[in-house]
Amino acid sequence: RKEVEQDPGPFNVPEGATVAFNCTYSNSASQSFFWYRQDCRKEPKLLMSVYSSGNEDGRFTAQLNRASQYISLLIRDSKLSDSATYLCVVNNNNAGKSTFGDGTTLTVKP
Amino acid sequence: DGGITQSPKYLFRKEGQNVTLSCEQNLNHDAMYWYRQDPGQGLRLIYYSQIVNDFQKGDIAEGYSVSREKKESFPLTVTSAQKNPTAFYLCASSSPDITNTEAFFGQGTRLTVV
Image 1 (cartoon, rainbow over the protein chains, first blue to last red):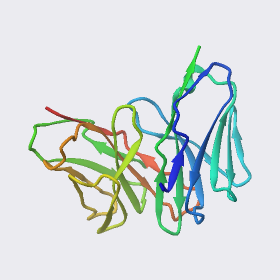
Image 2: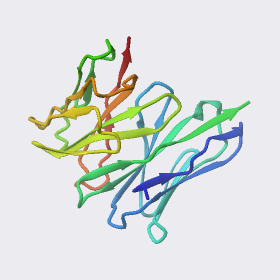
Image 3: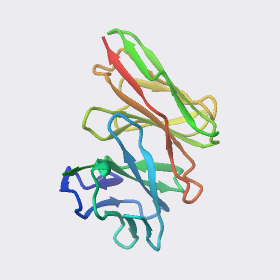
């Protein structure tokens, strides 16, 4: 089993739709969690950190469920510009390692 | 400004040649990583290093080699043993021992075998 697994996708949604991605992690000792966005032919960049209490940034909401060992990213009112690949990253502080998910591709259509 | 730099951005290699991709960071990060990405695919881990003079194989290490002689530098050599090296290579660094500190990626090197 992979240390970090994401919804395989791809997700194709119309503009204005709400879409959610999940990312599960296997190591219960994981301590920090992030969502990244990768545009075509570019490097991934930080979208938002995921805090224990959940956090929101405009149309984006990130949540952490430690009991079930997953994080989620919710995008409301999707825009064409949201089309990208979204990767989750899980840090295991004790192991000194960041583990990256494979990514989930989102295409928002007019 | 702190950051992570990969060079070159584009690299062309003849079959049978070894090439080395550079990755340098001035973020004082302990951990560094090399990923390969093929068109339409996710990241695949080649090698990672958690500390100077130590590194571990990732999922697809065959045909690649690395070194970590300095904290700031983690070069990747694509050897002639790598049968299909054409891909987008990404280097990343992080300090996973510090809570809520994110990883940073370089801009990537696009390697093409000609």
